[in-house]
Length: 263
Ligand SMILES: Nc1nc2c(c(=O)[nH]1)N[C@H]1C(S)=C(S)[C@@H](COP(=O)(O)O)O[C@H]1N2
Ligand SMILES: [Mo]
Image (tube, rainbow, N blue to C red; front, side, top):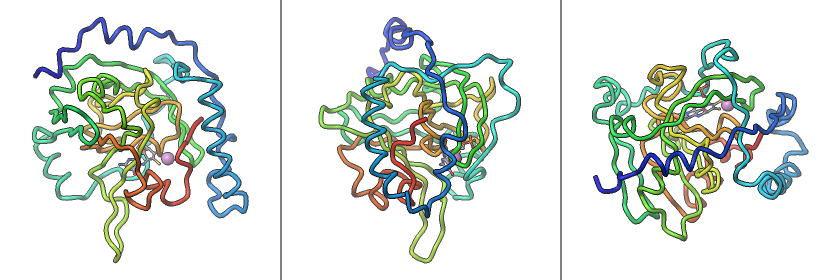
């Protein structure tokens, strides 16, 4: 496939920025986010935009999340949110060990892609031991292996007017009379091209288990857990996410969480 003449050298350039880790904040720093009814919420929402812009100014695109050693992995990655999708599409893909699953890359790209898991696994990969911080106040260190998202974006050739990457998931997170809601999320192109942003198919040296998002989930290491969709099947490049879901860029964002879940 012409889109995949990606050289090793290009990959190394993308990942050889060094590992001077930014110091991560502790759980305390985001405990307040649990209080979704807080009167401070709207203040925080406008502050979120400030935090986002400040982080961009101070840290820039090259700042990496801290990476750990094997010895720091003390327990399996704690499964959270949806851990066993009961959607029939997902179940039939799983029953065939995802042989029929494809990752679609579409939207504002010159060259839409449809990629099998084997193809992804044979692309250059990055492995990183990082800390997952959930907004609920727990953390977990684990080793993630996957394809750097920048490689996929280059292969698809992102159009100049694209601003965000939207992840569409196979799991239904909410069922109600007004309709079922599938998990979705979005990040901007700076985070999408960050060297630690990968589409992970491996966890702690094994294939990614169902409970943690098989066959593919995103890792965006400088943001909170809800910004890392599991069970993804489509990546869409857009210039705005206002017309999706309730317009805030993700399932949890639509329910009050900050769009920029920086840590
Ligand atoms: N598709 C999907 N992605 C998701 C969720 C989910 O429910 N569905 N939960 C999010 C939240 S809140 C967290 S903390 C992490 C949990 O990832 P883990 O199960 O691998 O720990 O996945 C995130 N991505
Ligand atoms: Mo979370």
